[in-house]
Length: 174
Image (tube, rainbow, N blue to C red; front, side, top):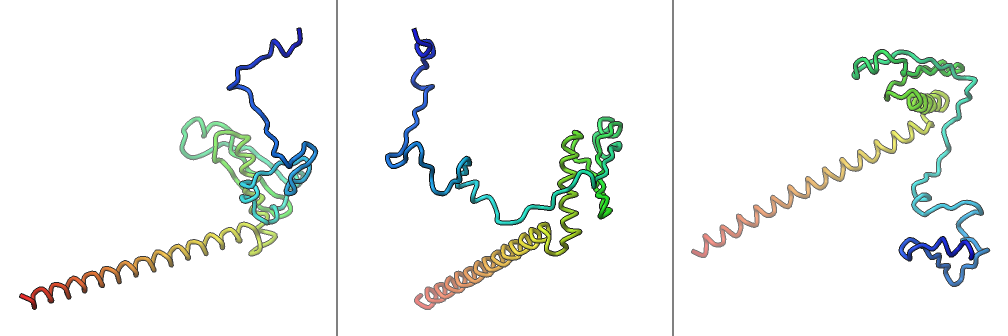
């Protein structure tokens, strides 16, 4: 007997792979490069922007100090607060957002990476660009809300004036 006889699955657990008529097994879709599979949602979520500057581990000085803040003994007695210093720029980041040292190390590196980007690139850094974009969006939302409020006020005034005109006409007809 063959091994396939013993490995029979019920029909709902099996999957069929249906290949479109024009697509052969050797052909790949034109949008995908060989060896990668990117969905349209992933492509839409990516922005065309350069990545942050990478940090060289030899340029970093890392310390672990005792935590602070709420959490009591669990945070105040353990050394899970990460102090990260970028030696060339002299920037220091202190991160104690979670109880985990590994997560704090990752977060501290990310924060330091953003600060180093601001330090070297100034107003052209990604952080400032994102802030400017967010500020523009906020101003646009404020402007739209103000316009909507003005429209509602005008509509209410028109409605009240039309109600007054109708009331005068009915009083005149009596």
